[in-house]
Image (cartoon, rainbow, N blue to C red; front, side):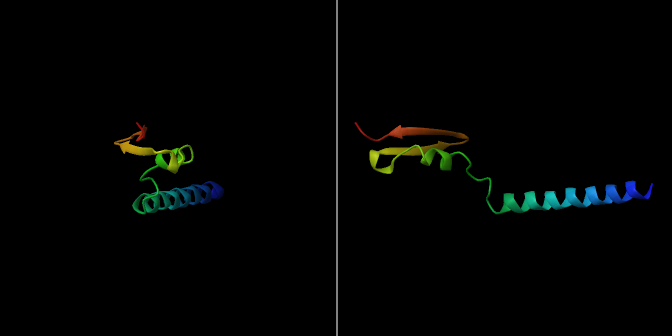
Length: 65
């Protein structure tokens, strides 16, 4: 019976630790822009392409005629 209480306390401690880690990550901007870095790999900078983000959607627009 004592083992159950130890496991409950340990799981609560781990849950609180993960909650604080998540809050820290959000406050430090880890989730600000998750789409644009992956699109930068696909677009060459000298090709005249520009990545613009509007709300939660990312689009690739060409600046060439």
